Length: 450
Ligand SMILES: Cc1cc2nc3c(=O)[nH]c(=O)nc-3n(C[C@H](O)[C@H](O)[C@H](O)COP(=O)(O)OP(=O)(O)OC[C@H]3O[C@@H](n4cnc5c(N)ncnc54)[C@H](O)[C@@H]3O)c2cc1C
Image (cartoon, rainbow, N blue to C red; front, side, top):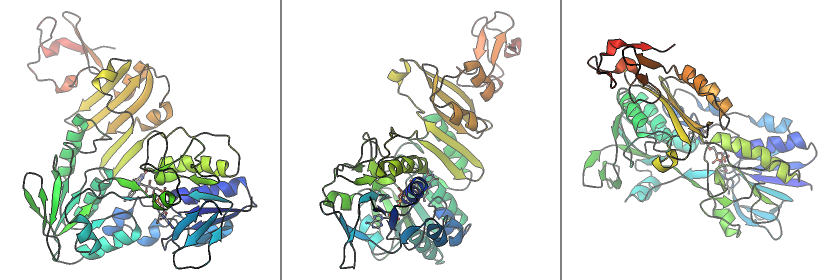
């Protein structure tokens, strides 16, 4: 094998190239991207809008990094067609196709635009509707809101990215509202109780939240004037930013007859349905799942690098979802399974939970057959390193109690226990007129069990 071509140069493409080079010093590695920047992180794009960071801070590897690793980086180059039978690629605007021995698709994903009347038209016409995926999107939003007539912003989508973006738009001085389709924030990362706590905290930062709200239309002819919700309510705004999930980029794979569904279908070695073509990152679907997070891209890029070189040692079996909300003053991490359904709870599932509503702190650990399966840590994330270390492993429940500082209180009169791990309310937060369910004695009659 002489030449490996990678399409896409964000985290998946770049780390695949790096991992291939680590394993093989000889092979030619050519990377193509339609973007004009070398590898940059998308994590801080919202901060580029509020000018908390500048463009240079986002670039992770400058062009000399590629030169040192003998990786040929081709910026501003869009691949328009794959010809798997003759192993060539066609480049937009160029006559001569390029050849490959092995091809890695690291095509990533694009923002999902829900079926909202006028959304695509007003976005394409650049009349005040935006999505945020790349540096150019961020610069366009920044330039649009710098106009003094732009005072109100609506973010459609109350997921992690929507909330982080809302925080930066608010910081940039706009009256900011988040509109979420589901009846709670972060429906995939939080349960109802913690979603409520998070909502209050975000509102306390001056950001408005509208839940259970389906946007039906974006209003305005020449420019955005507002949105109309199902039910008829109109919310006025000068800019709408849609942050409602992702769609894997699959078009050129589909056109080349690779097997696709939502994403490009791969097996455990990240091989596609076509010989010598592999796929990695946001664009893949493995086992009916797509990920859309950096830890998955990193894990997959190690596996795909080995597979491309014919070293099929490690198989991919999915990545545990791991998400952290990055809003200063709000610590929130959600990992793995956080809200098993009621039926599942009967089959060996257990929950240890500490909800301290007064201090706005929520910690929930989910176990199955004594193995740690997931956690929500909000307000107090000191248990985070323990949780990462112990995921999918057997845990000692007493150790977990200590970690979360959960206690058992004993009624000194009748011996009845109040176990904070099993109750909705911490002992200290019980009403003063709380009565022992065993003997009807007073709250003061309880003592912490040593
Ligand atoms: C604002 C924002 C914040 C985020 N924050 C986090 C976070 O905190 N934590 C986290 O885990 N994840 C986060 N993510 C998600 C994370 O950025 C993605 O999971 C990651 O970027 C996916 O990497 P990728 O390389 O697979 O795809 P992408 O990053 O999408 O890169 C694919 C690249 O391929 C190029 N490309 C596609 N088709 C072609 C073609 N035909 N020819 C040439 N080039 C092509 C694209 O232009 C793109 O540059 C965030 C995303 C956004 C947008």
